[in-house]
Structures are given as C-alpha cells and as structure tokens.
Image (cartoon, rainbow, N blue to C red):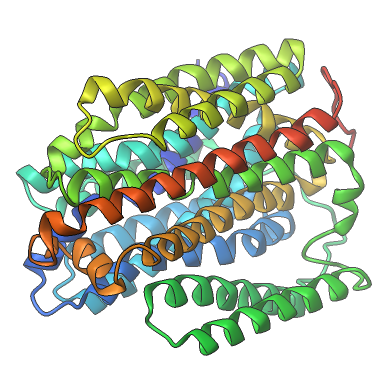
Length: 478
C-alpha cells in the first residue's frame, strides 16, 4: 500500500505543475491565438496572460488564511475542480474577451491549489523528509512555468491552441477525484477564528490596484498620471491593511510571523528572486520569436529545455540535502549561479545558437532549483502547524506578486527602447510588419538591461540568505 505522504506529494505536485504550466503556456501561443480569434486587440491578448497572474497573486494570501479556518484539503479539492472547469471553458472560447474571463476562473482555482499545496505537504511529511518533498513540489512550480513554453509551442504548432487548455481536463478530473478520496483533513481548532473580511478586501484591492498600475502603465493603456495615482492608492491601501492587521483580533496575516528570523529571511529572499526571474521566460520568448529571429513556437520552446531540465534535476537534490545539512549553503550557491547566468544572458547576441544559449540557461535553471526547495522548507518549518496555510499563502503570494511586478518593470525597460505599439505588435504576432530588423538593435539592448537587473536582484537576495544563520533540523512546535 502506498504511504499517505506519497499520495499527498503526487497529487499536490500534479496540481502545482498544472497551475504553473498554465501561467506561461499561453505566452508562447499568443501570436497564434491573436490570428485565430479575429478582432482581438493586442491589449486584450496581453491580458489573457496578465489577468491570470494578477488574480492568482491577489487571492493567494486570502485563500491561505481561509484554508486554516475551513480546512486545507476541502479548499484544495475545490480549487482543483474550479481550475478544471475553467480550463474547459477556455478551450471553448470564441472571443478574446471570453478567453480573458475564463482565464480568471482558472486563476481562482490555481489560487486554491498554490496556497494549500505546501501546507498539506508540510502536514504529511516528517521534518527529516520535508525538504525533499517540498523540493519536488516547488520545482514543479518553477519548472512548470518554463515547461509551459515548450508544451505550448508543441501543441500550438501541431493540434491547435485550444488544446493547451483541453489537455488539463482529463488530468484535472482524475486528480480532483483522487484528492477527494485520498487526502485527509487535519482536525481544526474548535474555536475557529473569524474571517477577516476587512483585511481581505483591503489587501486584494490594494494589491490589484498596484499591479494594474504597473502593468497598464507600462503598456501605455492608461495615462502616466492615472497609473501613478492607482499605484499610490494601491500602496496606501496595503499600508492601511498592515495597520488593521496589527490590532484586529483574528487577522488574515499574523504579522508576528515576521518576528521569526527564518521566516522573514526566507520571505525576503523569495520576493527578490521572484522579481529577478519573473520576466525571464517572457523576455526569452520575445527574444526567440521577435526580431530579428522570428522562430516558430515549437523551435522557440525547444531552446528553453536546458532551463527546465537543470531546474528539475537540482531542485529535489537540494531539498534532500538541505534536510541533512541545513538550507543556507544551497541558497547561497543557487542565487550566485542564477546571478552569473543572468549576467551571461545580458551579453547574448542577435542570433545565438542553441549551444551558445544552453550554458547560461543551465546556470539560471540550476540556480533556481538549488534555491527554491531549501528556502520554502525553511519558511514552512519556521511557523507552527496552525499557521502553515497562511505561511504557504504568504510565500506563493510573494512569488506571484514579484513575477507580475517583474513583468511590468520589464515592459517599462522595453518601452524605453521601443515604441509601446511595437511591443504590442510583437505580442500579437504582427511584429514582422512592425519594423522588422530595424527594431532589432534597440530590442536586444533592452533585453540586455532586463537581464542585468535580474542579476542585480539575484545577488541582492544573497543578503537575507546569509543573515539567516545556520539552522539544521529546526521546527517550530505547534
């Protein structure tokens, strides 16, 4: 009979892999979708991608807290069902607006999956095996985001873009039923805390406004003064949220978590690395499918295999070894390797071959793999069991928020070198008519700037990782 912990790991890894793949599988298929869904403007195409990331980032912390109150497994199973239904609806979309709306349904399901997976695994595995288990699961998130580009390129080039959504349906149905049958809900406290409705509304609204300001402002969809105003309002609402959480009886976010050195160090490093790598695949897709290369989706996807392969190899090994030796050395090594990889990528040429691109991509992927699992294990071990749901939500919120903000910052950098209309044209598959080779030099220069920024953020994340101290086999009771 299969041990319960392995049933948990297999199901949650399938869930996070599916949700992560769908965060990027659309990116490489956008030009094809734009051509086949006639009349869809470039801005709406962009929101097929951004809407998913934005909603997922906004709901994660809320869902993590709700899972601590109402049950992690219950909301996790609900998330799997919602994600599967959303995938089916996406595949049947007839207009760009429908596809954007159904992607938001997918994102809500993904929020339940992301916010609960790490907490359910932490509940099921003993301390000595937790790093390896979280390593496999967390690698599925990062590897899924990269693999989504490869899979999306293959599917779009062969059986059509609708199948990037339809393939989720049979997998989701089976996994939802298995989760309902196999996973066990842990006993919850008899005196349940109240739902922090005010905190939920303040956080979701503030973060949504901030991310909308960054992304819409970078794309030129709203005037700069409006973007600044939305951003300021978003930051102000998040500030009010933190003030409310400091005195409310049953807060959505227990700020006491950040008095724990390991938790704060892990959270800070996680946010910085998300900012550094958030636009990594996005910018590579631009580089491979935009000027002057114009590769097809299938070929562009193949170029990204070194990243996902090295990440999938390094992640579980780092998680397993960190259980024995502690996380710090693996975190430092991973961040250093990723930073070096980004520095290398900041010097890529207009037509580098697969063999020329593979070494820096391996450094970035391997570095991400070394960092992800030990950092998440240290974060989850730093909190008592009753708060693992919200801790998991905090971690994944930081990742998704950082990646979305990173995308916005990337668009800002690119807008400094290229007209925003040209960026939108590349996105929608009409880039060949948007200036062709004439825009190649400025486009490549903006890519170099983005990767230099990624390198700087990776090296900056070394600071909290070094300051956390050495912790081996530590766990907060509770």
